[in-house]
Length: 199
Image 1 (cartoon, rainbow, N blue to C red):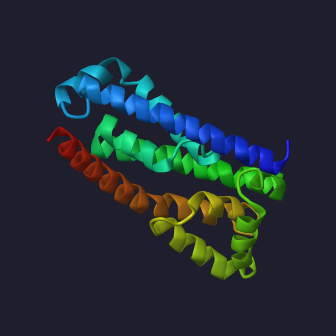
Image 2 (cartoon, rainbow, N blue to C red):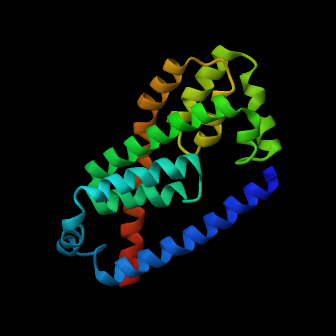
C-alpha cells in the first residue's frame, strides 16, 4: 500500500469515527448522562473496571493511529470519569501511546512516518533535528505548549539520536500540563454548549 493510499484511508476512517462519536454523544445526551450526575453514575456502574481499561486502550490507539480526534477522546475521559480520574486515564493512555509511537518510528524509520504524514510535513520538522541539543529543547517546549503537533514530533524524535530516557522523561513531565489544559477547556466549553442547547 502506498503512503498516499494509507493516509487517505486513515482520513476516511477518521471521518467515519467522528460521525459515530457524534451520534453516540447525541444518544448519551438523550439518555441524560451529560446533564444528570445520577444517570451518569448508573450508566457507568457496571463498567467500573472494563470501562477505564477500554478507554486507556482507545487513547493509546488514537495516538498511534489518529483515527479519533484527540480533543474528543480527552473530553470523553473527563465527562465519563470525572476531572481527576478522567485526567489520569487520559494521561496514562496518551503517554503509553506516545512512547509506542517513538519506538515504532525508531524501528521502522521514515517509511512508517510517511504512512501517517505527508513528505512536506516530514521535511518541515526534520529541519529542526540538525542540532540534537536544540531539538531536545524544542521538543520539550512543544510537548508542554498547547496546539503543538505532538504526535508528529514524537515520530520525528524516534529518528533522531535522542536518548530513550530523555524522551520518556519529557513525555511524562510535559504531557500533564497540556492534557489538563485541554481537558478542562473542553469540559467547560461542552457545558457551555449544553446550556445554550438547553435554553
